[in-house]
Length: 36
Image 1 (cartoon, rainbow, N blue to C red):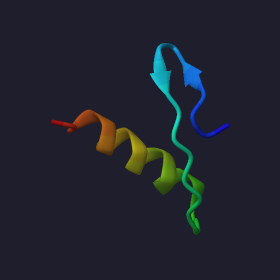
Image 2 (image 1 turned 90 degrees about the vertical axis):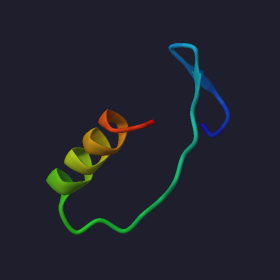
Image 3 (image 1 turned 90 degrees about the horizontal axis):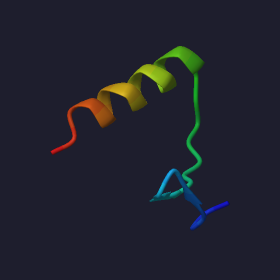
Image 4 (image 1 turned 180 degrees about the horizontal axis):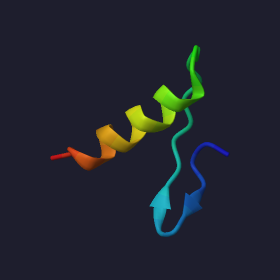
């Protein structure tokens, strides 16, 4: 899956240890929202 394209953007996969699914989703939202 790494390196494939979706909606014109290249996908980069990264595996991380999660303790809560909700914080993972909210963290990704906040990261993408405040990107410079």
